[in-house]
Length: 156
Image 1 (cartoon, rainbow, N blue to C red):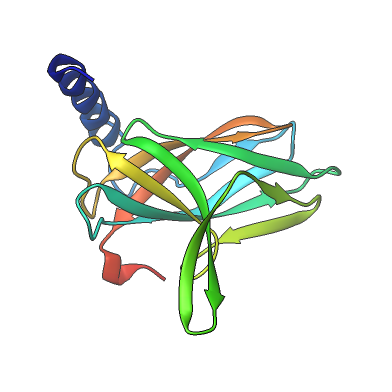
Image 2 (image 1 turned 135 degrees about the vertical axis):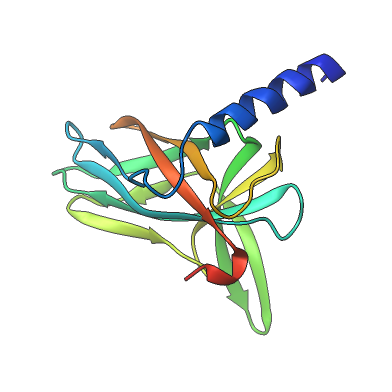
């Protein structure tokens, strides 16, 4: 990416973070047609400069399962779904291509398990910011959520 392209991307990401407001934003997105809701969203302030973790709950009130297939946000060059697995004393993060959300059930993304890694951050994010994040589903289309950022120590 050229220097001008990086500057434009950084400017857009800063607008996306700054324009989202603060904690007044409701961290929830609904898709009534598919019965999907996203709630309990939270992102940890990065411990490293260009990586942050995001947690949430996806509820499927519909009669058919749906599948989370991608996550996107202007603040990150990449957003990947990961699962944390223990192998004896070692803990590993493993990328997931998708996450099935069963009908009339919920999937929780929480520390120590499923989470979204925001990588290659295009601008700094700090506690008090609100991120705009799009979640793409196979059946339910796209849901947009406003995700508050907290200090890493304040994560659940």
